[in-house]
Image (cartoon, rainbow, N blue to C red; front, side):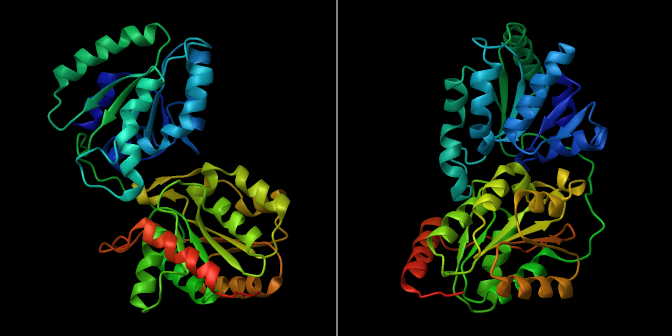
Length: 377
């Protein structure tokens, strides 16, 4: 089904959400039509954020917002859905559009498997009626579902359309870009070279995939790296937990701008604890590149001032490999918590692969390395 027809049938002229590769056709359509005009479209920091925005939209207009997201974000909407939207509280209706990663019987990455199994059950547990949109769902069928859903919405209840792989299409090729020139993969090569055998915690998405392939290409072990293949936004907190318990080891965190924004409160916690052995690096291409390239709010946010305000004593913002190398060298010898913003272009190799080892293998090798190796600052 064409994404524009789907959007017209489900109704609503205000969209807010977190981009998802399964919903790329819809995301491209909404961005192509509205851009980031806040009257019609807001790309949120996390799924709870966009659910609350949708609630505010309803309170101000009486109309119903469309919230789009990957099913991995269901956990982020449970609190506002249960304690704000629910008819036993404020009875605020929302139309959720959820990309179904890890659908049972459909091959997917390990971080999506369990989430895929419980996707429909979580909606049911929250009292949200859902309809699964497939490649064979026609417009007549969808209109009938939308009509039945209108009764739920009129009663202040939320509904959800769960989108299977390739169920939506959009003919136009929407391009996303920024004004930076440094490549992310090349930047990660320099970070890995600077870290040498220090532990690296790497964020979800293409950054972890690139780090894995960099190690393989250089014939180096993957034991140095913990790849946060899921749980977007939590890599820096994982790194904090490791840094505090390995005080004699220099811990590196390769984060993303969308990931940092998703749970930015983590930066305040890191700054308050201020571990001297943590280097927090944010690859900022101001885009949700792994899931299509839609922009993040990091394009207008000042990450350096945020980090400084959170208590990071040393900060850098770089746009070239030479500047990056200098910042990395300073971080290695500073003896204090360091934040480095690395401004990169959008883009990756067309043949970028995925880790060939399992998440469990990654965890076991990483833990063994932390346990058996005497690392020191």
